[in-house]
Length: 199
Ligand code: ATP
Image 1 (cartoon, protein in one colour):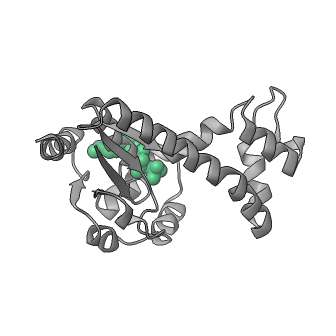
Image 2 (tube, rainbow, N blue to C red):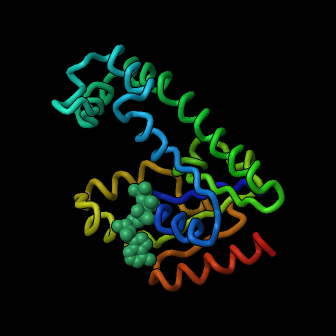
């Protein structure tokens, strides 16, 4: 079993590359996806969030209004800490469960890739068997964020500037996948990494 981290700046192509690895047989663990699932109706985590912050955060269909929650925690550090104290342990527990299930199913050969956008910022690189960094040149990243996410140029620039730099990410990388070009180019690089992982 190998347990790898996959990281990269906002809009660098983490989800795209994770999907390519998944198609080749890797198990992808995605904390964002887990936290979305834990906020679905009927989940204990959602119930705790509603008990703590109030049922005005539910829409008419009983689903979490993410925008309303974001507004509650945006400028209130204490509320954000309370939210993190509910959500983070649950996300970690579910990530561990998924990792253990994948390792148990294929103890020798499982490749488990954890998608961690803020790996460098949170100082976790050493806890993995290897780190895959997705790099996309700055201008291409800006263009994709504006065109595919509907972000303003100023917002995209500010978000990139708030994160670790490409150099900081490359410093912890065992592999760098350059996603500045076509998807075919990127897929060929994924194949090369995959061959090393399974070779
Ligand atoms: P985030 O940081 O927001 O989670 P991400 O790092 O997961 O983003 P993706 O969602 O994979 O990035 O990619 C960002 C956008 O760029 C998406 O709309 C995706 O379809 C597009 N994209 C990714 N790679 C390429 C590529 N090689 N060529 C063209 N478009 C791409």
